[in-house]
Image (cartoon, rainbow, N blue to C red):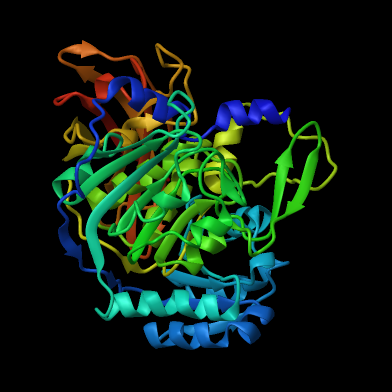
Length: 510
C-alpha cells in the first residue's frame, strides 16, 4: 500500500469534515466565550472487580502513580505482567474476571502491536467475540508526569478538581481557508447534541492559524475534541508535541480523532514496505496531552478515521457510561463490523511488504487501535441526550419481535458505518443502525435474527444485515445487531429521520 493511498483514505477531519463545515455552516466570529454549562460531576463507577496491571518497569518507575491508583481503587489487586507477551496477563484476568483493568506501561512498552494483541486477549476470556473488560492505560513522559496524571483523576473523583461545563470542538486545519485564518464560532456543528448541556464552540483554522497567540483558545473546556491529519509528534498544520504541552487547558477529557496521536513510542508507517519508527517522548503529542491538564485522553496508535471519535462522544452523551465502556463499545463495533468473529490482529513488522488492505481494513484496524488513557471506570458526565433509537421488544411464541424507531436526530455520527460505503449514493459511508438489546432472563447463548425490514415514511429502504452476536456479561445476555442501509450524503440518510423504523425477529438457537 502506498503511503499516499493511506493518507487519502484515512485523512482526519482537517480536510474532509472541516471543508464540509466551511462550505455549509454559517461561520460567525465568536465575540466572546460561550456561556458555560454546569460543571461536570466527575465520578468513578464502583461496580465489578477492578484489576491494576503493571509491567516490571512501570511498577518500579511509576510507584507513586500506582500508590495513587490504589488509593483511588483500594479494592484493586496489583499484578505485574510482561507487555512483550500480553498473554502473560491471562491468569490474572481469568482469576479476577475484572470489569475494569488499569494497565500501567512505560511509553516504549505501548504500541499498536500491543493494543491489537490486548484486544484479542480481552475478547477471548469467554466464548463470545466481544471485549470482556474495560481498559484504561497509565503512562507519562516521566514518573512525575504519570503520578500527576493519576492524581488529577483522583482529585476529580474526590471533588477537588471540577471539569467545566464547556465543550471545544477543534475541527483542525482547513486548507480551503486563508493560511492565518482563525474561526471560533458558537455551537458544535459535528456534535449538536452537546449544545443542550454544554456551552459549546467550534474552531476551524488555516494551515498557519494555530499560532502561539492562540494557545489559550481552548481553555475553560471540560471536554475537548481535536481533529486533523496526525502523526505521533503533531497534528499536521496545527499543534506539535512541544506546543501541546504549552496549551492552556482546564481539567478536561480530551478526544482526539487524528491519526497516530496516541503514540508514545514505537509506530509503523505504511509505504511500499512497512517502516518502523519511534517518537521521542518529549515530542510525543500524546505524552504532551497527558503532561498537560487532561484527566482522560482517547486517541489512536495507528492511522484511524475521524468519525469513530465523534461516535464515542455521542455515545457518552446518550449513555453517560464510564470511559472504559465507551472505548469498549468502539472495539465491539469493530468486531461486529468484521462479521462478529473473534478479533484477529494483523502481523506487521519493519521491512515487510505493506498489507494489501482496502479502505475497510484500514479503517477497521485503525479504529481497533484506539485506546483510553486514564481510569476506565471514570464517568465524566451523566447522560444528557436521547439514544438514537427507541427500541420496543414484544415476546411471542417464536421468540422476540423487535422494532427500533429513529429517535434522536441531533445525533450524526452514530448513524454512520465508517467501514463501508457500498450502499451510499455519494460514496460517503453507509447508514448504520447499531442496536444492543437486553435479552430475557434464561435466554441462553444463541440467537438468530431474521425478517429484517427498514421503513422510512412508508417506503422501504435498501438495507443489509451485517452481523449479530450474543454477548455474555455475567448472568446477563445482550444481543448486538449491526444493520447497514442506504445513505444519501455525508452523515445523511433515511435512518436519521424521525419515525424511520428497523424491524426484525429474534429466535433462540442451541
